[in-house]
Length: 110
Image 1 (cartoon, rainbow, N blue to C red):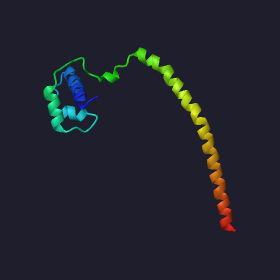
Image 2: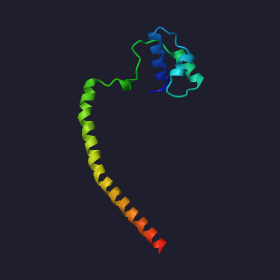
Image 3: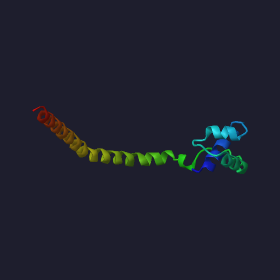
Image 4: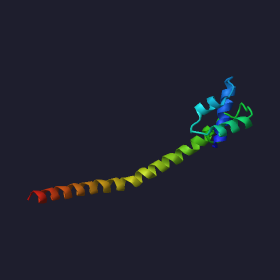
């Protein structure tokens, strides 16, 4: 989503709430710091569209979410399975480091 889309969305939400979109109101609701000239330019080009109140990326249907859930679960399971040998190897390496440090401590004390 571009900064101009975000400004338009905020302006539409304000207008839908019966407020007049202003630079100050919009700036206070932006997700990132934006130079005033950009806000002013976007506000000058903005035309109220009561339906444009969210980014197209936010409009994922419940059907799409339902279809994505099994894929997400399968990927999570594959990741978990791939991590098991790595976790075991890390545990073994920690044990080896501990033993090396203990051996080094014993040598230094003798």
